[in-house]
Amino acid sequence: MRAGRGVLTTRATCLVAAGATALLCGILLGVVDLVRAGVLALAVPAVSALVVLRSRLLLANRRSVEPARTESGATVVVHLTLTNRSLLRVGPLMLEDQLPAQLDGRARFVIESLARRESRTVSYRMPGLARGRYRAGPLRIRLTDPFHLVDVLRSFTLTSDFVVTPRIDALGNADLTRTLDVGDATGSLSVGSHGADDASTREYRMGDDLRKIHWRSSARTGALMVRQEERPSQGQVTLALDLRAAGHLRTPADEDDSDDDERARDSMEWAISAAASIGTHVLLDGRPLALLDDAAGGDPVAFAEAAALSDHLAAVRATRHASLAGWTRPLGRLARESTTVAVLGLLDDASLRALTAVHQVSFVQQAVAVLLDVGAWGSPGIAVADRVERAARVLATAGWQVVVVSRGESLPAVWRRLAERGIGARSAAWTPTGGSG
Image 1 (cartoon, rainbow, N blue to C red):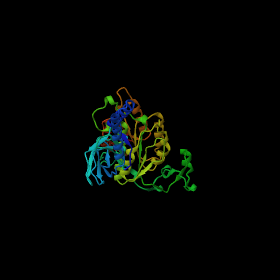
Image 2 (image 1 turned 90 degrees about the vertical axis):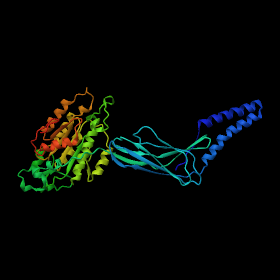
Image 3 (image 1 turned 180 degrees about the horizontal axis):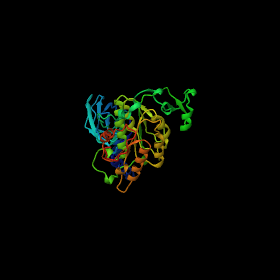
Image 4 (image 1 turned 90 degrees about the horizontal axis):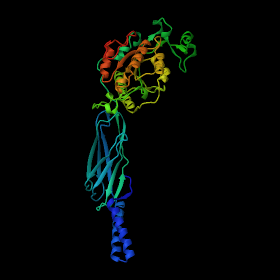
């Protein structure tokens, strides 16, 4: 426990002011009794401060969080256990635990007294927490003398960290990701089983044998291509998540309802929850997952466990990138080797060009775009339905399998709708919100 500085209470301040006045008046008027009274009034706070500051108070603090990992909207309880390790009884204590930076208010408690070796546990609740990483603590203790003239603040160093992950929906038995790997994409196939050169080539990577460069495909695509003896197994899934602030809307506070589900108020929270649910479904199915959530086109993050994915998505925040133009290269490379699922907000022209450039029928496996009709999350005056419909048609024309999602629609319903449409077929047409395909 770290030592603190003494602070005079209001009572002590008034006593010091009265003592100083009495002392000064006694000296000026020559009244000895008045001087004695002033000296006594000044001495009491000084002695109290000396006693409190030099007291050998030994307190121990133990803290825990229940649960240490939970989903958005849940309640977290912090337990604080204080033990008196001094030889004497401890008087009244005021406890104040520092709340996480995301929360307002204070967590204060008063303990009347603690006997020698006695322990006391107090708890407080934090309900309806939003997605994120939190740190509660450290605990601060206010000590005072019997006359309540001096307060001393002391603090511990221990803190409690916990994670609130996005809500994860169970997607049931409809295995969309397996449906996507149709036909020849289900396994590792030899070049001889395909007649086309494009089906047996991939983009050049650093370290590839230069003798395997396929010049005809390179000239046709504008990128250096190499021959591959086998097409890789298409078990991997690439999950692309649009985190642009410009691509999402939130329901205004004056129009907000009493729903405690953040996904109903913020389109980005719906998108993050959808990415967490799809990724968890894929990982539990035993398939590797790569997440691309950087609009600038940074390296994708590979995940092998669902818990690691949830922890990562608990901390992601909106980015200021205007478009998804940075996705063209990394997503194009990943899409050639894996099933691609993109959860998208409102798309501008640059983002559309980037996404349409990714999906080349000759090279890319199946790609699904979960496109949010973000206007449903905004104010009534924000009309973006035309832009959403145009984006859906452009993506569908480029070969993406598109489903448009509106506010209030659950991901399991969207998942079933995609599975019922037989999304593995490249010729599947775009279906507007609510369609069954």
